[in-house]
Figure 1 (cartoon, rainbow, N blue to C red):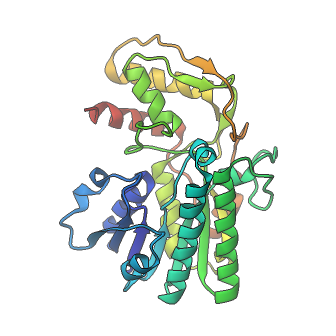
Figure 2 (cartoon, one colour; figure 1 turned 60 degrees about the vertical axis):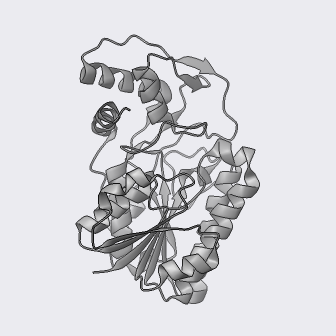
Length: 322
């Protein structure tokens, strides 16, 4: 079994990857600066002999190299997320997402890490209006965040080519599920909707709400990461893959789905309505993933679709409200 360094391992996605790796028998080194991650996400793993936590920053080359010592694989999830945050602070976004990721790749090369799997984003499709989105056709990106993700994809491809490293990138499409925080100005739409509805506060939908997204439940994303880390598929090295469900939902429909799910779960009839604000800068209009490539190369098949995932997510938020 391997020893896997998970950067951003105390975050929403990273902590679930840590869970799965421990479950299937691997050793895990969780590396996180706790800027956007939370110790609560991994506290249930503390005391497990196969788990260790290091508080560290991917911008610190020496700390990163020390954390990577003895590891066989790297799951690179650490990033400063959010399109709006990147517009407000492009320099910090660049420092963490590009320089930090370059540090991860270089440290992996120096330690002869077997494979690096890293998180990219559907934001790299930018203004490309093709539906569904195909990995080979990106567009002009629309935010600093998307620039950083496109840059690290290119760095990983070059490292794979020049240094003969095994790198695989995963373009996440709107991941959701338990542990996704509703707190802060840059929280994702689903936990914000859930929190607002449960507090009987009308959430704001940006624009007309008819924009669509391909929402992917966290279990699907974890499966894609595990396959990418351990499947022997030489044609996947240096490649990037869409990770989603392959189904599209409008934001208006999403709001109604969450409201109905909470109504059923709590036994309360909720009639709250959303309000509409202006369009948000940097957002793409529509998003739907073509999953042919990841199915063919890595055997990925989404197992939890939006409706089932929404039930699981709402129930988690209901049971974990402070």
